Image (cartoon, rainbow, N blue to C red; front, side, top):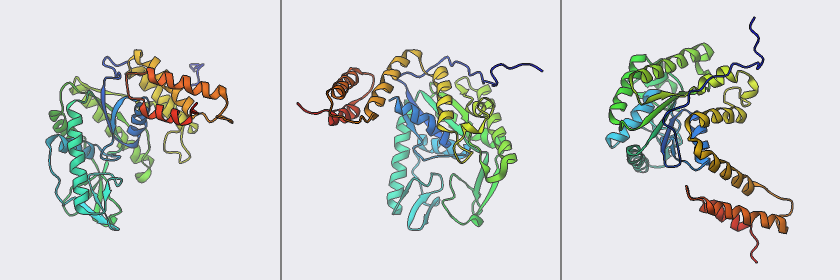
Length: 326
Protein backbone atom coordinates (compact mmCIF):
# COMPACT_ATOMS: atom_id res chain seq x y z
CA UNK A 1 0.00 0.00 0.00
CA UNK A 2 1.33 3.44 -0.95
CA UNK A 3 2.23 5.61 2.02
CA UNK A 4 0.74 9.13 2.14
CA UNK A 5 2.60 11.11 4.79
CA UNK A 6 0.25 14.09 4.52
CA UNK A 7 -2.90 12.02 5.29
CA UNK A 8 -4.64 14.10 2.61
CA UNK A 9 -5.57 13.95 -1.03
CA UNK A 10 -5.11 17.60 -2.05
CA UNK A 11 -6.75 18.90 -5.20
CA UNK A 12 -4.28 20.61 -7.51
CA UNK A 13 -5.90 23.83 -8.67
CA UNK A 14 -4.60 25.27 -11.92
CA UNK A 15 -3.24 28.80 -11.95
CA UNK A 16 -5.39 30.80 -14.33
CA UNK A 17 -3.75 32.81 -17.11
CA UNK A 18 -6.17 35.70 -16.74
CA UNK A 19 -6.48 36.90 -13.16
CA UNK A 20 -8.50 39.32 -11.07
CA UNK A 21 -7.10 42.63 -9.83
CA UNK A 22 -8.64 45.73 -8.29
CA UNK A 23 -9.62 47.12 -11.68
CA UNK A 24 -11.66 44.00 -12.57
CA UNK A 25 -15.45 44.05 -12.81
CA UNK A 26 -16.79 40.78 -11.38
CA UNK A 27 -20.23 39.17 -11.37
CA UNK A 28 -21.10 36.10 -9.28
CA UNK A 29 -24.36 34.18 -9.57
CA UNK A 30 -25.89 30.87 -8.54
CA UNK A 31 -26.01 28.64 -5.50
CA UNK A 32 -25.33 30.06 -2.04
CA UNK A 33 -21.72 29.00 -2.45
CA UNK A 34 -21.39 31.83 -5.00
CA UNK A 35 -22.18 34.19 -2.11
CA UNK A 36 -19.42 32.70 0.04
CA UNK A 37 -16.77 33.60 -2.53
CA UNK A 38 -18.60 36.75 -3.59
CA UNK A 39 -18.71 38.01 -0.01
CA UNK A 40 -14.99 37.34 0.40
CA UNK A 41 -14.20 39.39 -2.70
CA UNK A 42 -16.53 42.11 -1.47
CA UNK A 43 -14.87 42.12 1.96
CA UNK A 44 -11.56 42.85 0.23
CA UNK A 45 -13.29 45.64 -1.73
CA UNK A 46 -13.15 44.11 -5.19
CA UNK A 47 -15.76 45.39 -7.65
CA UNK A 48 -18.29 42.58 -7.54
CA UNK A 49 -22.03 42.07 -7.96
CA UNK A 50 -23.39 38.95 -6.26
CA UNK A 51 -26.76 37.24 -6.85
CA UNK A 52 -28.94 40.23 -7.79
CA UNK A 53 -31.82 37.78 -8.44
CA UNK A 54 -31.29 36.13 -5.07
CA UNK A 55 -29.84 32.66 -4.65
CA UNK A 56 -30.46 30.41 -7.66
CA UNK A 57 -29.69 26.70 -7.83
CA UNK A 58 -30.51 25.14 -11.20
CA UNK A 59 -28.63 26.09 -14.39
CA UNK A 60 -31.73 26.89 -16.46
CA UNK A 61 -32.93 29.57 -14.03
CA UNK A 62 -29.43 31.04 -13.83
CA UNK A 63 -28.89 31.16 -17.59
CA UNK A 64 -32.43 32.35 -18.38
CA UNK A 65 -32.32 35.22 -15.90
CA UNK A 66 -29.03 36.47 -17.32
CA UNK A 67 -30.37 36.16 -20.87
CA UNK A 68 -33.54 38.06 -19.93
CA UNK A 69 -31.47 40.90 -18.46
CA UNK A 70 -29.21 41.17 -21.50
CA UNK A 71 -32.15 41.15 -23.92
CA UNK A 72 -33.84 43.89 -21.90
CA UNK A 73 -37.14 42.04 -21.66
CA UNK A 74 -39.92 43.60 -19.58
CA UNK A 75 -41.53 40.99 -17.33
CA UNK A 76 -45.18 40.09 -17.55
CA UNK A 77 -47.54 38.85 -14.85
CA UNK A 78 -47.84 35.14 -15.58
CA UNK A 79 -44.92 34.10 -13.34
CA UNK A 80 -45.88 36.31 -10.42
CA UNK A 81 -47.63 34.72 -7.46
CA UNK A 82 -49.21 36.18 -4.33
CA UNK A 83 -48.78 34.15 -1.15
CA UNK A 84 -49.76 35.49 2.28
CA UNK A 85 -50.18 39.03 0.87
CA UNK A 86 -46.65 39.07 -0.53
CA UNK A 87 -45.89 39.11 -4.27
CA UNK A 88 -42.99 37.07 -5.66
CA UNK A 89 -41.74 35.92 -9.05
CA UNK A 90 -41.09 32.25 -9.92
CA UNK A 91 -37.79 33.14 -11.64
CA UNK A 92 -36.41 34.88 -8.55
CA UNK A 93 -35.50 33.84 -5.03
CA UNK A 94 -38.09 34.49 -2.32
CA UNK A 95 -35.91 37.32 -0.96
CA UNK A 96 -37.09 39.36 -3.97
CA UNK A 97 -40.60 40.32 -2.90
CA UNK A 98 -43.05 43.23 -2.59
CA UNK A 99 -46.44 44.07 -1.11
CA UNK A 100 -47.99 44.99 -4.45
CA UNK A 101 -47.86 43.68 -8.01
CA UNK A 102 -46.62 46.96 -9.46
CA UNK A 103 -43.92 47.32 -6.82
CA UNK A 104 -42.57 43.84 -7.58
CA UNK A 105 -42.64 44.41 -11.35
CA UNK A 106 -40.81 47.71 -10.91
CA UNK A 107 -38.21 46.10 -8.65
CA UNK A 108 -37.58 43.19 -11.05
CA UNK A 109 -37.45 45.36 -14.18
CA UNK A 110 -34.99 47.66 -12.40
CA UNK A 111 -32.85 44.64 -11.47
CA UNK A 112 -32.78 43.41 -15.08
CA UNK A 113 -31.74 46.87 -16.33
CA UNK A 114 -28.97 47.11 -13.73
CA UNK A 115 -27.68 43.62 -14.53
CA UNK A 116 -27.64 44.36 -18.27
CA UNK A 117 -25.51 47.45 -17.66
CA UNK A 118 -23.13 45.56 -15.37
CA UNK A 119 -22.72 42.61 -17.75
CA UNK A 120 -21.68 44.96 -20.56
CA UNK A 121 -18.42 45.61 -18.70
CA UNK A 122 -18.06 42.41 -16.65
CA UNK A 123 -14.63 40.84 -17.07
CA UNK A 124 -15.17 37.82 -14.83
CA UNK A 125 -18.49 35.97 -14.62
CA UNK A 126 -18.61 33.30 -11.90
CA UNK A 127 -21.46 30.80 -12.15
CA UNK A 128 -22.03 28.30 -9.34
CA UNK A 129 -24.36 25.44 -10.27
CA UNK A 130 -26.22 23.79 -7.39
CA UNK A 131 -28.56 21.08 -8.70
CA UNK A 132 -29.76 19.40 -11.89
CA UNK A 133 -33.22 18.81 -10.42
CA UNK A 134 -35.87 21.36 -11.33
CA UNK A 135 -39.51 22.03 -10.51
CA UNK A 136 -41.93 22.68 -13.37
CA UNK A 137 -45.39 24.18 -13.08
CA UNK A 138 -47.92 21.54 -14.09
CA UNK A 139 -50.08 24.17 -15.82
CA UNK A 140 -47.51 25.26 -18.44
CA UNK A 141 -44.38 23.06 -17.98
CA UNK A 142 -42.27 26.12 -17.19
CA UNK A 143 -39.25 25.68 -14.93
CA UNK A 144 -39.28 27.77 -11.76
CA UNK A 145 -36.34 28.95 -9.67
CA UNK A 146 -38.36 28.84 -6.46
CA UNK A 147 -41.78 27.41 -5.57
CA UNK A 148 -42.53 30.17 -3.02
CA UNK A 149 -44.63 27.91 -0.75
CA UNK A 150 -47.18 27.33 -3.50
CA UNK A 151 -48.84 23.89 -2.94
CA UNK A 152 -46.62 21.04 -4.15
CA UNK A 153 -49.43 19.59 -6.27
CA UNK A 154 -48.98 22.49 -8.69
CA UNK A 155 -45.46 21.34 -9.59
CA UNK A 156 -43.62 18.27 -10.73
CA UNK A 157 -39.94 17.61 -10.20
CA UNK A 158 -37.60 16.15 -12.78
CA UNK A 159 -33.94 15.86 -13.69
CA UNK A 160 -32.61 18.08 -16.45
CA UNK A 161 -30.96 16.48 -19.47
CA UNK A 162 -27.44 17.42 -20.48
CA UNK A 163 -28.83 18.73 -23.79
CA UNK A 164 -31.17 21.13 -21.99
CA UNK A 165 -28.32 22.51 -19.91
CA UNK A 166 -26.08 22.89 -22.95
CA UNK A 167 -28.72 24.56 -25.12
CA UNK A 168 -29.65 27.03 -22.37
CA UNK A 169 -26.02 28.05 -21.89
CA UNK A 170 -25.43 28.33 -25.64
CA UNK A 171 -28.22 30.93 -25.82
CA UNK A 172 -26.67 32.88 -22.96
CA UNK A 173 -23.13 32.60 -24.34
CA UNK A 174 -24.23 34.11 -27.66
CA UNK A 175 -25.38 37.23 -25.79
CA UNK A 176 -22.31 37.76 -23.59
CA UNK A 177 -19.28 39.84 -24.63
CA UNK A 178 -16.53 37.49 -25.82
CA UNK A 179 -14.08 39.43 -23.65
CA UNK A 180 -15.82 38.05 -20.53
CA UNK A 181 -14.00 35.24 -18.75
CA UNK A 182 -16.62 32.74 -17.54
CA UNK A 183 -15.68 30.53 -14.61
CA UNK A 184 -17.98 27.70 -13.58
CA UNK A 185 -17.96 25.87 -10.30
CA UNK A 186 -20.23 23.17 -8.87
CA UNK A 187 -21.53 23.92 -5.40
CA UNK A 188 -20.14 21.53 -2.76
CA UNK A 189 -23.38 21.87 -0.79
CA UNK A 190 -25.38 18.63 -0.86
CA UNK A 191 -29.07 18.74 -1.78
CA UNK A 192 -30.76 16.20 0.48
CA UNK A 193 -34.29 16.62 -0.88
CA UNK A 194 -33.86 13.61 -3.17
CA UNK A 195 -31.34 11.73 -1.05
CA UNK A 196 -27.60 11.30 -1.40
CA UNK A 197 -27.78 8.91 -4.36
CA UNK A 198 -29.74 11.39 -6.48
CA UNK A 199 -27.54 14.22 -5.20
CA UNK A 200 -24.53 12.45 -6.71
CA UNK A 201 -26.42 11.99 -9.97
CA UNK A 202 -27.36 15.66 -9.98
CA UNK A 203 -23.83 16.89 -9.28
CA UNK A 204 -22.33 14.57 -11.90
CA UNK A 205 -24.56 16.08 -14.59
CA UNK A 206 -23.50 19.59 -13.56
CA UNK A 207 -19.83 18.62 -13.57
CA UNK A 208 -20.16 17.03 -17.01
CA UNK A 209 -21.90 20.15 -18.33
CA UNK A 210 -19.03 22.32 -17.05
CA UNK A 211 -16.57 20.01 -18.80
CA UNK A 212 -18.45 20.35 -22.09
CA UNK A 213 -18.59 24.16 -21.78
CA UNK A 214 -14.86 24.30 -21.08
CA UNK A 215 -14.12 22.06 -24.06
CA UNK A 216 -16.25 24.13 -26.44
CA UNK A 217 -15.39 27.73 -25.46
CA UNK A 218 -11.92 29.20 -25.01
CA UNK A 219 -13.05 31.76 -22.43
CA UNK A 220 -14.88 29.24 -20.21
CA UNK A 221 -13.03 27.63 -17.30
CA UNK A 222 -13.72 25.53 -14.21
CA UNK A 223 -12.76 26.07 -10.57
CA UNK A 224 -12.94 22.86 -8.50
CA UNK A 225 -14.67 23.99 -5.29
CA UNK A 226 -16.77 20.81 -5.32
CA UNK A 227 -13.72 18.58 -5.59
CA UNK A 228 -11.84 20.48 -2.90
CA UNK A 229 -14.72 19.99 -0.46
CA UNK A 230 -15.46 16.36 -1.36
CA UNK A 231 -11.90 15.03 -1.70
CA UNK A 232 -9.45 17.37 0.01
CA UNK A 233 -11.69 18.31 2.97
CA UNK A 234 -13.52 15.00 3.31
CA UNK A 235 -14.11 15.22 7.03
CA UNK A 236 -17.20 16.39 8.94
CA UNK A 237 -15.14 18.89 10.92
CA UNK A 238 -15.23 20.99 7.74
CA UNK A 239 -19.02 21.19 7.79
CA UNK A 240 -21.37 23.47 9.67
CA UNK A 241 -23.76 22.07 12.29
CA UNK A 242 -26.29 21.03 9.64
CA UNK A 243 -23.65 18.69 8.14
CA UNK A 244 -24.52 20.11 4.71
CA UNK A 245 -22.95 23.55 4.35
CA UNK A 246 -19.18 24.16 4.50
CA UNK A 247 -17.90 25.48 7.82
CA UNK A 248 -16.13 28.83 8.11
CA UNK A 249 -12.82 26.95 8.14
CA UNK A 250 -13.70 25.14 4.89
CA UNK A 251 -14.80 28.37 3.22
CA UNK A 252 -11.54 30.01 4.28
CA UNK A 253 -9.54 27.09 2.87
CA UNK A 254 -11.38 27.14 -0.48
CA UNK A 255 -11.02 30.92 -0.57
CA UNK A 256 -7.24 30.56 -0.23
CA UNK A 257 -7.21 28.14 -3.17
CA UNK A 258 -9.33 30.59 -5.13
CA UNK A 259 -7.07 33.51 -4.26
CA UNK A 260 -3.89 31.66 -5.22
CA UNK A 261 -5.24 30.60 -8.61
CA UNK A 262 -7.35 33.58 -9.62
CA UNK A 263 -6.12 36.80 -7.98
CA UNK A 264 -3.06 38.71 -9.14
CA UNK A 265 -0.20 38.33 -6.70
CA UNK A 266 0.49 42.07 -6.71
CA UNK A 267 -2.91 42.52 -4.95
CA UNK A 268 -1.86 40.45 -1.93
CA UNK A 269 -0.01 43.21 0.02
CA UNK A 270 -3.02 45.52 -0.22
CA UNK A 271 -5.35 42.69 0.81
CA UNK A 272 -3.17 42.00 3.87
CA UNK A 273 -3.10 45.70 4.79
CA UNK A 274 -6.87 45.97 4.44
CA UNK A 275 -7.39 42.85 6.55
CA UNK A 276 -5.28 44.36 9.34
CA UNK A 277 -7.29 47.59 9.18
CA UNK A 278 -10.59 45.71 9.46
CA UNK A 279 -9.25 43.63 12.35
CA UNK A 280 -8.14 46.82 14.06
CA UNK A 281 -11.55 48.44 13.61
CA UNK A 282 -13.30 45.35 14.98
CA UNK A 283 -10.99 45.12 18.01
CA UNK A 284 -12.75 46.11 21.22
CA UNK A 285 -10.24 47.12 23.94
CA UNK A 286 -11.04 46.98 27.63
CA UNK A 287 -10.52 50.75 27.88
CA UNK A 288 -10.82 52.54 24.50
CA UNK A 289 -9.91 55.91 26.02
CA UNK A 290 -6.30 55.04 26.81
CA UNK A 291 -3.63 57.03 24.97
CA UNK A 292 -2.18 53.78 23.58
CA UNK A 293 -5.46 52.80 21.94
CA UNK A 294 -6.12 56.32 20.66
CA UNK A 295 -2.65 56.34 19.10
CA UNK A 296 -3.46 52.97 17.52
CA UNK A 297 -6.68 54.38 16.03
CA UNK A 298 -4.89 57.40 14.56
CA UNK A 299 -2.33 55.10 12.90
CA UNK A 300 -5.17 52.94 11.61
CA UNK A 301 -6.82 55.99 10.07
CA UNK A 302 -3.57 57.03 8.41
CA UNK A 303 -3.22 53.59 6.84
CA UNK A 304 -6.81 53.69 5.58
CA UNK A 305 -6.28 57.16 4.09
CA UNK A 306 -3.25 55.86 2.18
CA UNK A 307 -5.34 53.32 0.26
CA UNK A 308 -6.27 54.66 -3.17
CA UNK A 309 -7.37 51.50 -5.02
CA UNK A 310 -10.86 51.55 -3.50
CA UNK A 311 -13.10 53.67 -1.32
CA UNK A 312 -12.43 53.58 2.42
CA UNK A 313 -14.65 56.44 3.64
CA UNK A 314 -17.01 54.14 5.54
CA UNK A 315 -14.19 52.58 7.57
CA UNK A 316 -12.54 55.97 8.19
CA UNK A 317 -15.89 57.22 9.50
CA UNK A 318 -16.07 54.30 11.95
CA UNK A 319 -12.52 55.01 13.13
CA UNK A 320 -13.33 58.72 13.57
CA UNK A 321 -16.26 57.81 15.80
CA UNK A 322 -13.83 56.01 18.15
CA UNK A 323 -11.20 58.74 18.20
CA UNK A 324 -11.57 61.14 21.10
CA UNK A 325 -11.51 64.71 19.84
CA UNK A 326 -8.80 66.83 21.41
